Image (cartoon, rainbow, N blue to C red; front, side):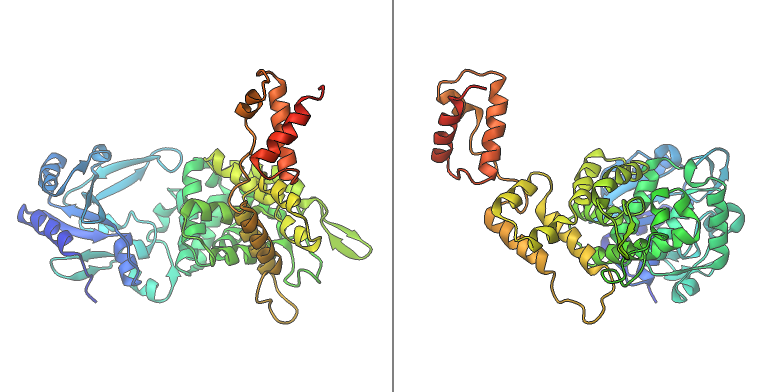
Length: 462
């Protein structure tokens, strides 16, 4: 197999070669090409570079060179729709705590086998020589890809970087690889020694995002994390496996099994909007996180009353351990709180007022998606339903009412009170809140009706 390169990228490599610099394509681009997956990120290791300044001058012909990584010997260039990272070969020595506790040594005369030894997994240690049109595979990464196996490059250095535990989890899930037993044992030892506690939450979040957004079945990653003992860090997930569910509504078994089935269901129905998909996937991951503390046996039936309400603060604690975006968390928590409301509204044939009121607490379109993943994320005794009837009902109702994506805008505003001759005061807020409640309940639907209602209301003493 020959790795196909865009002609514009070949032009860059030829120019480097003209200056005596040998380019080897490394890392994810090579791995993904072997898997017949496309990517626009290309890492290029350069041999024969005399200085970073020299490299910068050569690359300037193709566009603006990003100097962010210059102190580390890394230059970035966006060209022809690709993101190119250039760096000389290097070796790394563990010198400190955490993911960044490394001392980097650039060695221009390093051979590829030695340079690739610092990489985490054999599938990421494959290189490609564009001049000779040949793959460089000193650690058997191609064979591991064919066998769908995830294996470390060097056991003695793998444990130096605690982030590699989570990278193993997300790579195994993304590419549906089996994790070599010795790698699982090594990661388990790293976790037991506090590897995850060493990581800043930003780095944990990045790996969780990749696991959720790039995996066809994120459940594979979470099962692997559990096998490695990683749920000791994500401790709110630990009791899900020992929390039983009623076998009639959940034939699949405990809350952990249901959660992972629901998560995979959501992953198969992504919207294509990265931020929204992340919110939905995280919401499904934590939607039943309140069940362990609320599950009871009543009249021989297992139930978890108020698990959605109780789950909100548990979910918050869980998410704040690694999520760096407060706004994201605030979008997720209402989905946890109201995830059972879709079926309850349908079962009670709720009126328009109830639907409008709910739209002020949560985005209904997102809620329907989470409820649908919850509904299908289970086993069924008999034939699997062809549609989520409650979700379709609420979707149609909310769409008709214009509240599918946002609550209704208030019909009456402060300027309307002033137009009635009222002077701005503290009472304005109460009046407007009451007016909005009346609007939600369908007391009035037009501005004219609203003005009539507020005229009568504003004349009453507070």
